[in-house]
Length: 410
Image 1 (cartoon, rainbow, N blue to C red):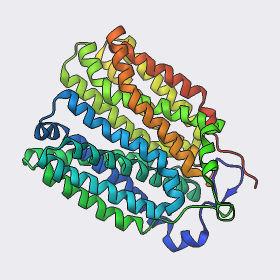
Image 2: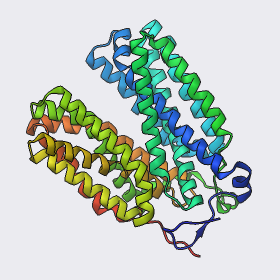
Image 3: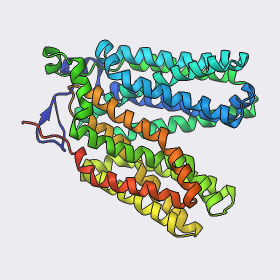
Image 4: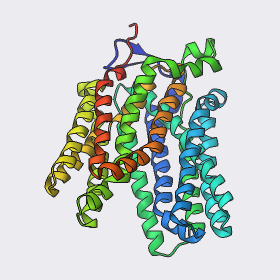
C-alpha cells in the first residue's frame, strides 16, 4: 500500500507479500537493467545499419524496406501484447520476449548477413520488433507500478536509462566498426550479454495485478474497450504528439539545418547531439519536476518548451538561436511519452491494454511522421515543414489535462 502525492487516496499496486519477497530496491534495479539492455540492443542495431547494407548489398530503397520491418513487427507486438500478458503474466512474458529479441538479432547476424537472404533478414527483424515492443510494455508497466508503490516519479528516469543504453550500444558499435568486427559476430555477442542480464533481472520482477482482477478476470472484450475510452484516447493524443515530436527531430533536424539552412554538416550533427543530450537531461530531471508541480503541469511545461524551441528554429536563421531552440525542443520532447505511459497505467486493472493502446498510437506516429515531414518539405521547404510538429505540440498542450490521475476513494 502506498500513498501517491498526486492522488486523493492510497493505492494498492501489487500484493504486499509479493513486494516484500522481491524487495523494492531490487525490483527498481531490475527494471533499470531491462530498460538499459533494450536500449543497448537498439543502439547496436542502429550503429551497424551501414554495415548491414554493405554486407547484404542493399540499395537505399531496399534498405528502407528492410528497416521498416522492425516498426511493423513492433506494431504487431503491441496489438497482441495485452492478450499475451493476460495469459502469461509479466515475468513469463518478459522471459519470452527478451529471449525472442536476443534470438532474432543473433539469427539476423549469423544467418541473414552470412547467407544474404533478404527473406530471413526481414522475418528476423519482424521477430525483433515483436519482442522489443512487447518487452517494452512489460518494463513500462513495472516502471509505472514502481511510481505508484514508492510515491515518486521514476518513469522519465527509466526512459533516460533506455537512452543511455542506446548511446552505449552505438558507442560499442563504433568500436566494433573500428575493429572490423563483422555483424555476424557483433550481434550475437551483444544479444548474449543482453539476454543473460535480462534473465537475471527478471527474477526480481513481481507479478503485477490487483485483487479485483483476481476475482473478476479481464475478458477479451474489456481489453478491447480501452480503444473507445475517452481518457485513453486523449492520452493517445499526448503520446502521438510526443512521439511525432521526438521522431521528427531524430529523422529531420540534421537535414533541415544542413539542406534547409545551408549550414555545414558538422553543425547539423552537433545540433542533433544537443537534442539527444537535452532529452536525457530532461528525463533525468523530469521525475523531480513532476513530483513538485504534478504530471499535468509538467506536461504543459514540456509542450510549451518544445513549441518555443521549434518556433525559434523555424523563424530565426541564426546558429546560436537555433542551438537554443534545439535545446528547448529536446527538453520539451523528453517527458511526453513517459508521462503518457504513466497516465495510461494509472488504473492497475487492465493497465496492459491501455499502455499497449497508447504505445500503438505512438508507433503509428513514428511510422507516418517521417513521410509527412518529407512531403511537406518538398512543398514548403525545410525547416518550415517542422511547423506541423508545432501544431501537434499545441494539440498535446491542450489535451494534457487527460493525464491527471483519476480520483480514488480514500
